[in-house]
Image (cartoon, rainbow, N blue to C red; front, side):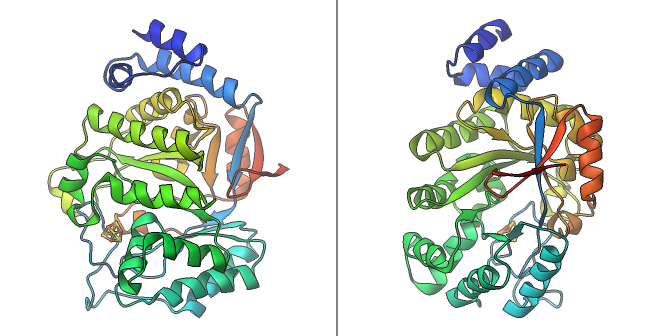
Length: 357
Ligand code: SF4
């Protein structure tokens, strides 16, 4: 089967569901990695690996959505609940900017007490005070929350964010785009359409976004193929995804921890990455996740189809809440990329080249 898949991949033919399932469940890992790397170099020919200087602060941990995999949120009124003012968020962005960040990925819980103007002010003020920083703000379900509290459509909210100066949207909250999985782990967030519709509306308006996947919990290979199919189809329609970013579920302090004690290790990660490179034939960039999988796994990922290292993540609180902490400097990143045999190149949020390091 892998020979047939290799033949199709080399000739630009699209893989089907059976082939996707085979890659996830049966293909030899090293052969799969070698093929993914061949396809990576066909798409991104030189030996460069991009990275971004970024930070991932949060504006609130208040949330009414109760996802089973989330250790970060607190219900409204909880003694540990917090919400930052616009100025407090801007102080965090100022700190990131002072360290050279060109991207700030800002996300938070679904806090029904926050009016639409709060979000718009965050975008406008970030654009005004830190023009070198791209406000990569608010995942699909946060945009849905804004629509709900302001009695507007998703399209109206996207238009308002665009007018405020936002141009990109982070891909978080996709988890696994399968009805079965989402009903099980995040019943209040809606099915795959909830995430897909926001990204579709955004791409139609000219926004760029990433597509993510959080695997390693209750999904089957069929669910992963559902996810791939959904984002591949959307990418065919609008070409709005800049990259695909998979990472493994971290069970610490979550409701799902009762059933899933450990996160999937590097082998499962490398398989997911390589198989995704082959299946997602219309995605230019596949991002390695040094943060979520470890720096050494991140280096190996560069030989399994990934062409991007991700970011510096000066601040990160969501994984930290699950007792998972990892930090890095720009110097570490460039050294690790070089040690893995590649040339480090800094990029923007939308993968334009800033400079070679
Ligand atoms: S993942 Fe997001 S939406 Fe779900 S509970 Fe956590 S903060 Fe809320």
